[in-house]
Image 1 (cartoon, rainbow, N blue to C red):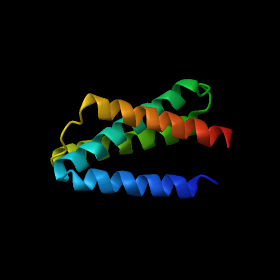
Image 2 (image 1 turned 180 degrees about the vertical axis):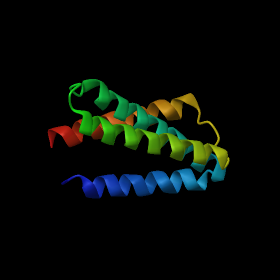
Image 3 (image 1 turned 135 degrees about the vertical axis):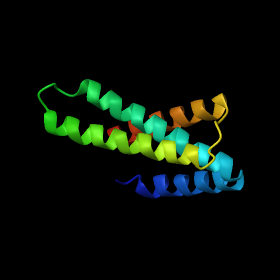
Length: 103
């Protein structure tokens, strides 16, 4: 994608900020990211035709991985993020998804 350099730079910056906030916040960011990705995958599942079992299996496996990653980050000390940060993450993901779709 032509947007790959921007996604990479943004991810690096977000990682820097989350890491500088300490392990608990950094792991909390991972937990929230995985939960939001899981939700995104479930949205895809809702839109898939019922007969597309192969795609459903793939998306279900991906969602299970996201759940496991979130649980592990939480187990390692991930702290819940404040609601405004969770909302900002959700809006950022929407913007990125829409930009990717149209480009």
